[in-house]
Each structure stands twice: as C-alpha cells, then as structure tokens.
Length: 331
Image 1 (spheres, helix red, strand yellow):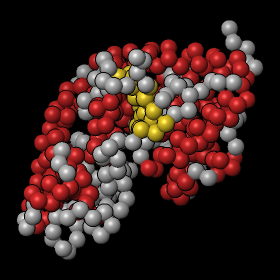
Image 2 (tube, helix red, strand yellow; image 1 turned 90 degrees about the vertical axis):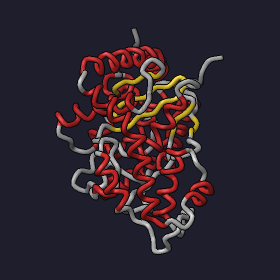
Image 3 (cartoon, rainbow, N blue to C red; image 1 turned 180 degrees about the vertical axis):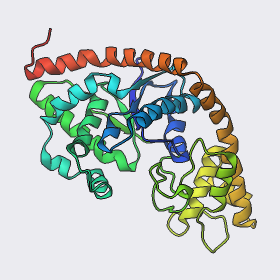
C-alpha cells in the first residue's frame, strides 16, 4: 500500500524553541515510518522580513542540523531547501493568478505581521499564503501538520486547488490537516496565553533548543505561574502552570492527572525544577548531535542535496502538467 504524503517546513529565522520541538518536530519523528515525509527549510518565506544574508544562510544549515538532531532520519525523510526547488516559486506565480484579493485580505496572519512590521508591508507578506499553497500542492500532499494558527492557510490552499481543478480538471489533491495528539501548542513561559515564539523579544519567554542547561533552569525558575501554589491543570484559570504541565507531560509521557498526583502538596518550586530537569535531560543528546553535525558541513550538504534532488523529481512532472493545462508551452 502506497504511503500518504506529508509536507511541512519551518522558516529559517533563527534558533528553534522547545515549542517547535514538542509541537512539531517531535510529531514529525513519530510519522517518519508511517508516511512519505517531505520536510523543507522554508527560506523563501523568510524573505518577507529583512534578514542579514549571511545569517539567513547559517540559519538554513543550522535548521537542517536541528531537524536531524531532533530525530528525523534523512534516509526515511526527504529534507530539502525550499529555494532549491524550482516548482515552489514557479507554481506560486501560477496560483497567484487563481487567487482573489478578497481571500488574501481575510488572512489574519497578514494583519498580524503587518502590524508588527509596519515599516515593511511588502507584497510578499500579502501573497505568503499562495507560496504556502504552492509548497503543499506541488507534492500533492495528503496531509499537512498544522497548528491552530495555520488552519486558515490550509483552507485557502484547498480553495485554490478546488478552483483550479474545476477549471482544468483533476490536478491537485485536496490536503487535510494533520494535528498531533499532543504538543500542538506550547505557550510562552512569561506570557502563557501566547504561543512560544522564536521571535519573542523577551528571552525568558522562550526556551531555545541550543540553550545551556543553566539557562534552561533559569528560564523555568522564572516562569509565570499563579498564587495558588498548587499543581493543577486548568488552561483558563491557570495558564502558566497548565503550560508547564503540558511540557512535562509530553517529555515524561504522563497524563495531567498523573502529574497532579506526582506533585500533590509540593508547590511550584519543586515542580518547576522537575520540569527544567526533564527538559535538560531530553535536550542533552539533541544538542550533542546538533554540534557534531555543524562541525561537518559537507555531511549537511550531502543530505540537503540528496533531498533537493528527490524533491525536484517529485514536483517537476506536476509543474509541467499545470503549465500545459494553463496554456504554456512545455517541451
């Protein structure tokens, strides 16, 4: 039986957080035997925000190393760089011509990013969802791992695909959302009502995968909780504690009820220390492997070149089919 195709990627905009790891990479690792997985470094998407060119190049290679260090086997997954695959920008342009301004105007992420980057509201920021649609449709992906904040992008991808299919016949699969059973949304340590973000300006709000053990302990020690001093899961009334419980639960494979029982009567000091140590222990082998990979850039190059080749082979046929259907001359 042919495996279903999964496509996902992370922007090359700096280090990954514990939220990226527990919410995305951890689930990706679990999927690699069951699905045909394509994981990209979304470097084209990063261009909507001005970046230092050398920093972007280094971030791209670092992200490949983190993918592998987190457990993604390059023999089981296709790991590639988005900008190396001609189908992504080429298909994006075609799909732009089948996407309506009103649809893009409704994208909440554009409004959010435009507010944060008022001095650089560029057209790439506006048409970002179309490039994302091209990313997904180029591979005829069956499933796309998404968090709640990405569901709208998947919806517009399906709308664009349906519109194209209705005009030119069956061309694209309509992708479905794949939402992991756990870890879909890890929140900030200082603002537990907002998703942990690698772009957070407050360093105490995020745990980076490359943080030292001492930095990790310090961040959890200062994590926002509440005045009750009782380890109890309640996302509405106790967002900080509930977030820490989610982190601990994923790492230790424990239910919220088990965690409540484990720390009954012990207070937040003991609990925060336990969470911090669990994170330190989980990240230690990841960091070791990551540093080994960064010291071997030729190995990283070999991995992404192999992935690039497979991704090009996968997408080239479909891109030519799209070109033919819209009337472009194809050799």
